[in-house]
Amino acid sequence: MADIIATNQTILVVGAGISGMTAAIEAAECGKQVLLVEKNPAVGGRVSQLYKYFPKMCHPTCGLEINLRRLKANPNVRLLTMTEVTAVEGEPGNYKVTLKTRPRYVNDKCTACGECAGAVEAEFDDEFHFGLKKRKGAYLPHAMAYPQRYVLDPRIIGTPDADKARDACRFDAIDLDDTERETTVTVGAIVWATGWKPYDAAKIQPYGYDRFANVITSVELERMMDPFGPTGGRLVRPSDGKEAKNVAFIQCAGSRDRNHLKHCSRICCMASLKQTTYLREQYGDEGKSTVYYIDIRAIDRIDDFYQKVKEDPNVTFIKSKVASITEDKDGNPVLHGVNTEGYHRYDNTHDLVVLAVGMEPSIPADEFPVKVKINEEGFIEQDEANGAIFAAGCASDALDVNRAVQSGTASALRAIQVVNRVAGAEG
Image (cartoon, rainbow, N blue to C red; front, side):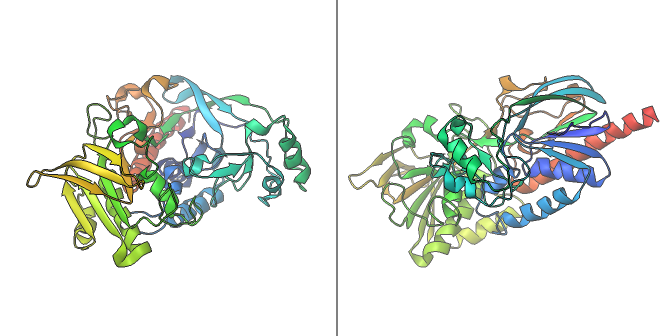
C-alpha cells in the first residue's frame, strides 16, 4: 500500500455505505481532498444488500452505480477498504487518526476472473447473505463489489487452499505475505458514517427465531429475493424449500420495546409494506400477506405507498403485538395474540414469518475510538462537544436511504466549512 498523503485540509470519511459515499463524493466534488475508509472489502454498506428501495421499488444497483461512477472518476477521493479507525487525537482542524488495515491477500493486479475461487475448496458462511449461503475461501464480496477485487479469507492462510489460490492466478495477484498495517494520518475534519446493524432477532425469545427455521428477518428476505442470493430469487421456506405464499410480517420486532430497543427504527413499517409487494411479484393473486402492527408509521410522501398497499385485497392488517410463535407438526409457524381492534384472540398459521427487526448503530457506545456525545439509543448526537467530528446517516439516527443521503450531504458541508477555515487561517 502506497503512503497515504493527508493534511489538516483533508476530510476523513469513516464508513462507505450510502451516507459515507455521499459525504465523500460531495466533498470531493467541491474540490476537497477526501480519505474514505471502509472496514469491509467493498463499499456500499446495507444498501448493497437490499433487493429493492421503497417507494419507487427500483433496485439499489441504480443508485449505487451512479455513486460508484462518481467515486471512481474523482481523483480527490482516496479509498481504503478493510480499514478501521482505532484512535483519534487532536482538535478541530488538526486530528491525528490511527488506521488499521487488515490484509486482503489480493493486490491490485486482480482482474476478478475468479480462478482463485475455483481452485479453493474451503467454504464459509457468507456474511453478505447473513449466513444463508456459503462462499469460497477466495471470494468476491458481491456482484457489484467495488473494488472489483477478490479477497482471501484469513482462515485459509497457511493451508493448502492458499497455495492453490496463488497457483491458480495467472496475474500474480495473490500475495500470501500480505500483513496488517497501521497508519497515522492528519486530517482537518471527520465524517463518521459507520451505519447500522440489524437487531439480533434471537434475543426476542417468544418469536423463536433461533428455534424455528421458517421465522426469518426482514434483511434476510431481501437477500432471498435477490437473483444472486441464497435461493436464486425464490421466495421459499428455509425448512423445506417449498413456496412461501402465505407470509406474516411482524412489526416492531425488537423496536419500541423497553426489553430491547426503546426507539422506533423508522424503516421497519415501510420495509414490510415493500416486502408485501414481493409476494405479488412472485405469486400474483396466490400470494397472501398479513401485517401484524402496533401502528403504521408511514409519513409524508411514503403515505401514498402505504395507501396503495392497503388497497391490495391480498394484504391483511392485524393491529396486534404478537405475543408468541409456536410451530405445528408440519413446520408451519403459528402466531398467537390478540387483535386489539375488537380484542379477538387468534392462533394464525402461516408458511413463513418475517420479523421487521430494529436498527441499532454498528458500533456499540463503549467501542468508539474517539469521545463523542452519544444518546441512550447509541446514536451520535449533533453537539459542539464533538468538535469537527460529524455523524452522518445511521450513525446519527435511524434513517431510511433518502434521509441517510441527505444527512451525508449535510455532514460533508459541515466538514468543508472546517477545512475552509483551516485553509483561510494558514493562507
